[in-house]
Length: 317
Image 1 (cartoon, rainbow, N blue to C red):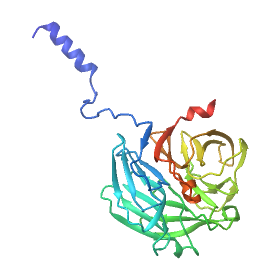
Image 2 (image 1 turned 60 degrees about the vertical axis):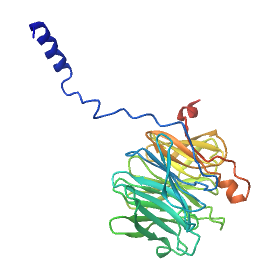
Image 3 (image 1 turned 180 degrees about the vertical axis):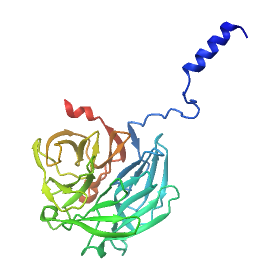
Image 4 (image 1 turned 90 degrees about the vertical axis):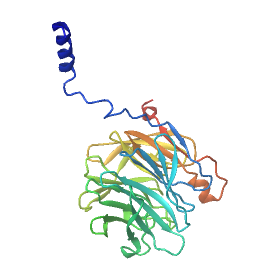
């Protein structure tokens, strides 16, 4: 080998020092902007995202199935339908490989929260909410960095905390601000842990409002002062890039909260109708078109069901 060739070889080696083999870190394809679900009757109320396997999970108000949707759009059943419950909110604990879902009684079971092993699909834990409060139920839930689950109850003025390590739950916070004033289970809905872990944000469906619950102990429950656009009745809520997004039937609102999550400015953008909840997928906002409103009202469902990305840039226009 000539001295010139040797010098070139050494220069290339030095330039690539510390570089990883591209075969070890393949580039991941971008998530699709829209996923059309195959079911025509599941009414997929909740949606969650697993960043490790890059799968969406869609729950079902009809049949109690859970559908797994891969990044490329391919579908598989994570939980087979058996008509045992209406499954609402869902959250993924990627680190502990768990999927949490809210199960509302249909076939004689109590209102429960189910915790699944994401890898095996095995049901690992069942939390019965009636043991924590009279007629206790779960509408939605979120997880803190330690894996504890915080659960909203649409009919009771209580937020529950569930511990996957002990398999036990407790009433974490209670306040008239969390109450259902309608008597029809239209109180608490979505819930989100703040990015800094100092607060829970709870969505009240009727009348539309956001409530702050302090963490880690839940001793302070206060209303969040809102300005800007009128907040439509919020269903699911999620943080993306520091901002809170709330989903209503035919719109999505960005709520830009202040530093201690006590006040925020609302910008609402109209969307297609039939929406319910949302997920943060790779720092992007994805919502699910579930047709929940038409389902509850007994109206025809506007198919197909979809999971689609909402451009957060729309809220700056």
